[in-house]
Image (cartoon, rainbow, N blue to C red; front, side, top):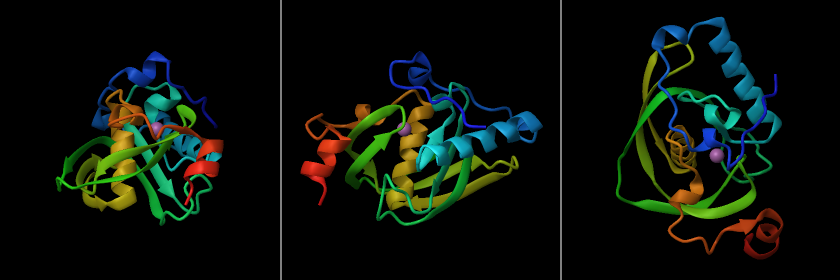
Amino acid sequence: MILKVSRLGHPVIRTPAQAVAKETIASPAMQRFIDDMIETMHEYDGVGLAAPQVHVSQQIAVIEVTQNRRYPGEGPIPLTVLINPKIHQLAKKQLVDWEGCLSVEGLRGQVPRAEALDVEAYNRKGEKVRFHAQGFFARVIQHECDHLAGKVFLDRMPDLKTLTHLQEFARYWHD
Ligand code: NI
């Protein structure tokens, strides 16, 4: 089922999400909700989606990049479900790149993000997973974890001068 996406201005976008109780991960309701999040991400060509973006204030995020119309040229990321994720930035070094957000419709901006992370989370089977992420994958994880803390990419922009509508992005900023 495709879920309704919440947009900036809805309080749920600014509310830190609750941790998920490990015992509830395997429940049919939770598994169905995760499937719905994945379907919703696909429907809107997102590379990631956090539960608060579909009006559910719980620490769940889904990420996947195949060939994405909104982010051409970014390498594939296999379908990843992160529950109660914790990230640890590995390098001081930050990379600046463009981000957009289904909850901040029609806008793009340049955001600095840590280049590499250690990530710890539950997967959709309720298993604890630990892995290393870098580059675009690390960027998307940081963006989604921000959603789980009630933050959006605008909060991470050191200034708003690169904030642009999509049409103007294609016209003036696209290399
Ligand atoms: Ni977003």
